[in-house]
Amino acid sequence: MKFIPKKHEPEALDMSPLIDMVFILLIFFAVSTTFVKDMQLELERPQAQTSAVSSSKSVRIYIDRDGTTYMNEQAVKPWMIQSFVREALTVSSSSSVLVISDRLTPTEKLIEVVDQAKLGGAAEVGVATQL
Image (cartoon, rainbow, N blue to C red; front, top):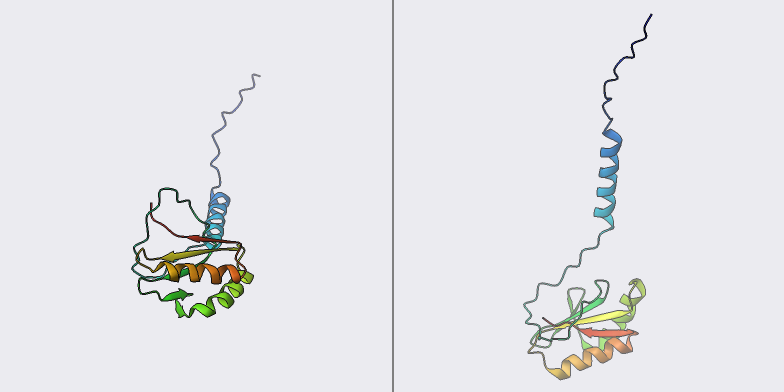
């Protein structure tokens, strides 16, 4: 008697564990991604040829062309910046501050904000520019 082996049909793979893992990864990345939302101020940033990309975790201070300073979407007085920066740096993982100002902002106002940020404990203070 001759033994004839059966031809094996290819088995279908169960895709449900793979789909579950893809959804879990999608949810993980969606939850762990941080989105930086800038204030809705119309600012013309100054141009610079030597600009570099800043950290998205920096504490942000905005100055409009009138010289009004904003932190956390609310106007602050210059003497309040130091305490606001100190408080923001305690909860932030970064020790840097990014000042985003209009190109027509008075230089005196920009220097005052940078000084207050440094007095508030910022290790690095940068000024946002446009390429």
